[in-house]
Image (tube, rainbow, N blue to C red; front, side, top):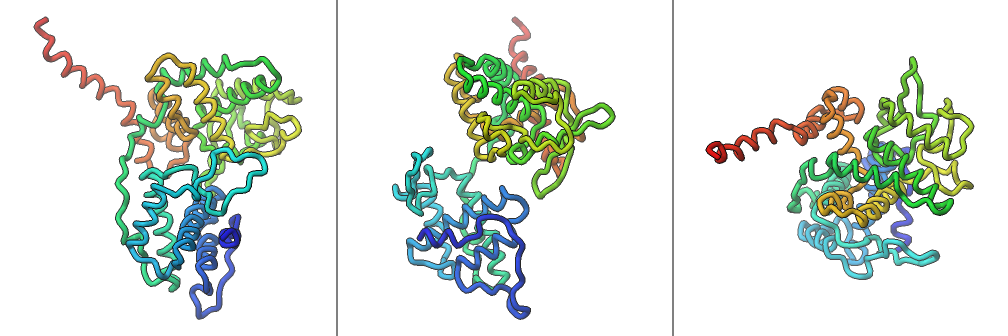
Length: 374
């Protein structure tokens, strides 16, 4: 079974064309899925990894059931969704495996997938099946025919830190323990990472792949070059606060230059291990730092409402927080769209709805209606 997944490509690569009279030369499910990954997963490493993860889970499940992709019926798709929502023990792996611990090939889940994650799996696998159906490998697309899991779509306001929570978290990070060399390095990195995420609204993948040389100065103003989804390049404006935080971070690292220089290869967020400063961090590592710092901060927060928001925080929450707070401060929709790299202005308007003070004022009018005679 381990050979089954190992046969899938482990990174994006260029597609090779089959014979002229054949749409897809694959003869096995692994070959077919590999062809789809090569053809459709090359937009970014993050996209490739996500597609591969969903396909691998399906292939493992099919192998256990003694089924092939061609044999799948709609009922099988529903059984697979139920499996993801309530996986057996031999499919679960520890969140932090011990050093040297060998995992079973099926240990690909850390717990039950929620309806939103199952819905995402359905979408990705539906795209895969559509590709393989058009290529003539599959007779039908059972995922498109299956029932979409019921998902409650949370509003943007439920997935960002309000101003009060952000101010509390920022103050807590400034007071992080500094009783050892490692604690000092951890606190310095956390301060820089949260400043970077908050003031730029960049995604964790964009942070992980960024380098100090991506900071550029033009006519005295600083910008950060970012390569986002679909390998789209954009430049994010560096405000005065972030520039100060950049200098503080670089000074703490003991770098010779106060400001980045062109071509500098040091990662945007470096390892606290001095011997690995030049090694880039993974998006997962960036996310873990945010989650761990958030969890530690929440444990020390006496306000239940603030604690709940910080404890639930993820890296992407910081992107939502950036957009929401920008608009609260009076920034324009157009510039916010450009900074975040939104292709559709409707995406940016969602954040404007979340901070519409007129809704609060109008709600208070109702509250005052019955108190006019008091």
